Structures are given as structure tokens and as C-alpha cells.
Length: 172
Image 1: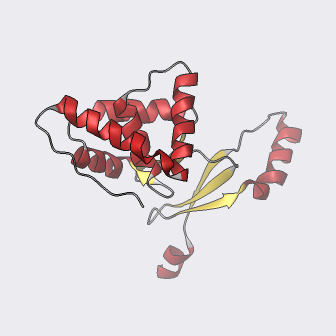
Image 2 (image 1 turned 90 degrees about the vertical axis):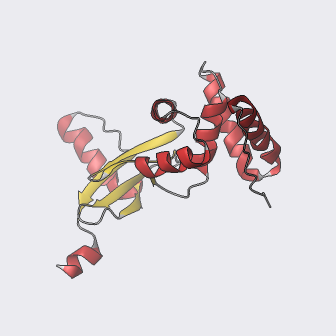
């Protein structure tokens, strides 16, 4: 079981060093192997693997499912106040471009999740913001229809459909 260690230092360099050490010390955890795979992806794509990127990636991996950008930034700033907000935004953007994260645009803002190895789509409630996932086979017929009728090859690996969830329908 991993233990949380709060590192407090007046020296930002020491704080970064200790947090990097803690990240590396957790390698025995199987989830960290996925983390290392993501870190390797960053390096393989010719990008620098900075301590801030590693900390941000670790923090987002701790969340199961989606996390709102503002919630995520608040958590990072609370635990790592020396990391600038612009660094967080740039890192989220980079991790999305590298295929490590998926970005989901909802009516309440942007959310992120770890990229899935399988294709899945999101159903997003316009009233309450509830997000549900459905598997891509539900869109096989639609994909074939678009390809045959419009001669267009749709990429539905990540698709968001907005509507009203069952709970909100019952409440109205």
C-alpha cells in the first residue's frame, strides 16, 4: 500500500526533487507500470520528460474516469503550489496531443480522462452534466451509413452525444 508523504520545503528545488523521488519510489505498484508507459510515450515522441509533467500525469491517473479541468487544477495547486497554471494547461494539451489523455467538452467545461485502449463514446446530460460511456459497437451501423452514403470515413473513437439523462427526464 502506498503512503502519502507531504513534502514541505522552503526550497522549490528540494520540493520538486522529493516529489520526483516519491514518484519513482512507487514503481512497485502495477498501476505505475502504466504510468511508466505514458512517461515513455512522452520521451518516444521527442518531448522532454519534466518533473512537472510527471507530477501532472500521476495526479490525473489517480482519478478513475473523468475530471473537470478546474477541479484538477485546484487539486494540483493545493498539493504543488509551485507549478504554474499555464504549465498545467500546456501539459494537459500536450498529453492530449500525444494520445495519453482524452479531452471531453461538456456544457460545463472541459474534462479529461486517461486515453482508453478501446473505443468508447460519451452520453452527456445537458442539464446535470452526468457522463455515461457506451461502447462503439452501438455506432457500427451509423458508421457504415455515413461511409456508404456520404463517402466519408468517420472517426468515432471518441464521440460525445449531448441529451437529457433519465434522472433529469424524470425530474421534469
